[in-house]
Image (tube, rainbow over all chains, first blue to last red):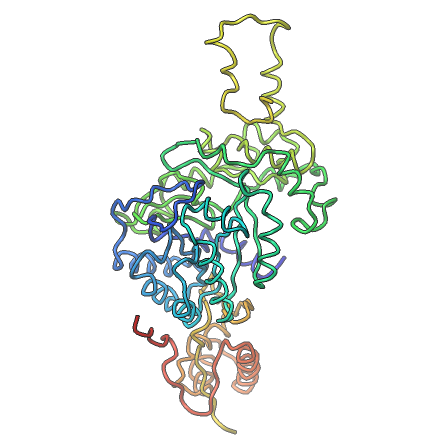
Length: 378
Length: 106
């Protein structure tokens, strides 16, 4: 076990939050087609409120702090916030589109000892990237920012969200990352909008493309190992919990709302009305999230993938049940190994049960699977 | 032997976790954990107090250890952390290091 993993385990044993993502604004200078946020300002926390939150997080034991948005540089006080965070000795990671970063901003981030900058890049081709961000010239500015940051010796990583519209450009983005000398991370996850609108899920890449990703040694390393059938789960797996959300990590919105994770929109308290540690220790929502073990998941506990699946409880929550399966992760497990998940098999059974010939009126037909996983309905 | 003054570098991240100090260098992402004794030296590294005084006044008293043994351990600890740029070491008092240079006018 690495030293870092040991510290995570220790934080878990002590019930401490070691990692927090704080979105300081939802405002943004880009309008990405897949974005789940409402970019209007509905009353962001003030500088003083954010600094108070940072002090509370430091007192609570938080070590890893991700500052994200929206676009973080839309806030005039961004560097004041970073400076205070660094004085409080957080390990700070900044997520940005880089459009507003020039030489001076890059130098300041270096001075302040920011650990890492994550920048979203959707394609190496301006016509594709800019069509996704809806900001003409954005790729050029983003690449320029990466060069400024690199020239300061900062660690930069490119985050490449994969959608149907940019999937074929993924090798180009990897080549761009290589040319710029930065790390590359890929994310095929598209989540519903915060208001529950699921229309953007149509942007997700199809399963066949996922399979291609999982069989690319450049991305996954040893393909045979990565795509191996899951081993039978032991007791430790069944007594385990799905991820760090609510256990050692949480998310705070620009309005002070606290959630188990940025992808788990279960309102658990608000730092404008309550102390952070009171929410962390005593909110009924966090307690419920922490109480769930793999053996408590009605479908997933019976699934062959239970020990290796990337099941996101937040996505499951958005699908209606935090103890339920997350269809997107079922699809990933299936495309990775070729073995259908318990959820897929259950749905297939529902579809196949019944008479061999059915006669229905057009208005009443086919509703069982509408909007569900494309694999099942295909 | 010349006196040593030690100060925490501003280019690190640190947090106490269950009696151990986690320290990470932003420069090379090296991650350390410090035990209770090392954490006490770390917290006393204000750039103004000589290392020998930290050892005799804090470490020996709080942890009931032999002075020579504690000094040897503290020297090794300081050497190692200074090699990673996590502690700054000087033979004269260091200026306040817990602050960053001011931003250039924007």
